[in-house]
Amino acid sequence: MKILVLNGSPTPNGNTVALVNAFKEGAESKGHDVNVVNVAHKNIKGCMACNFCKNAGNGTCAQKDDMQEIYPLIQDADMIVFASPIYYFIMSAQLESVIHRFYAITSPKKAKYSALLLSSYSSNVYSGAMAQYKDMIGYMGMTDKGIITADNSTNKTPEKLAEARALGESL
Image (cartoon, rainbow, N blue to C red; front, top):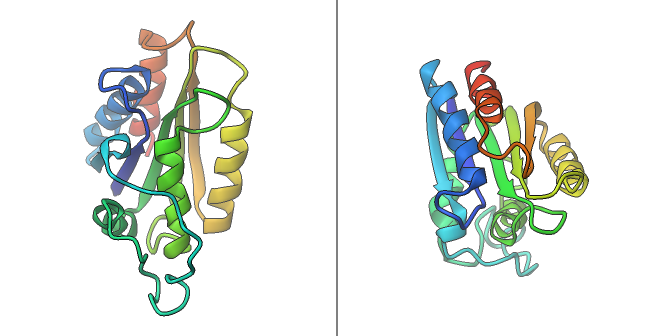
C-alpha cells in the first residue's frame, strides 16, 4: 500500500515527528511504501475561494505553489495520514492550508484509508482536530485506521512510540 503522511509540524525533531517516524517504521516493516511530506516547510497558501478548480481548471488549482508537488502524491496514495501538533485546539496552520486545498480535487482518487497523529503539551485539546478529521474523511469516503494522541506526559515515551509503530504494523 502507498501511504502518504502529511506532516504539519514545523519542528524537525519534535513530538509529532517522533510519532510519524514510529508509524513509518511500523508500516515499512510490513512492506508498505511510506512517503512523508513535511508540509510545514513548503510554500503552500490557503484556498482563495476563486473556484477556478471547479470551473475552467477542471480540478486543478489556480495557485502554482508547492501544493502542485503534493497533488499527485495525494492522488496516488492508498492511505493518507494527517500528522500535526496541536498548538491551540486545531491542526497546525501549515497542515490546514493543505487540507483547504483539497477543495480543488474534492477527494483523493485512490485513498480508502486514513489515520491521525496528534501531539500537544496539553491534554484534552484534541476534540476540534478530531471532529474535523472525522467529518473530512467521512466526506471523502475514507475509513479511519486509527487516531493517536500524545501530550506532555506521553510525548516520545517508549509506550506512545510503540503505539504509533503498532498502528503502522496493523495495516
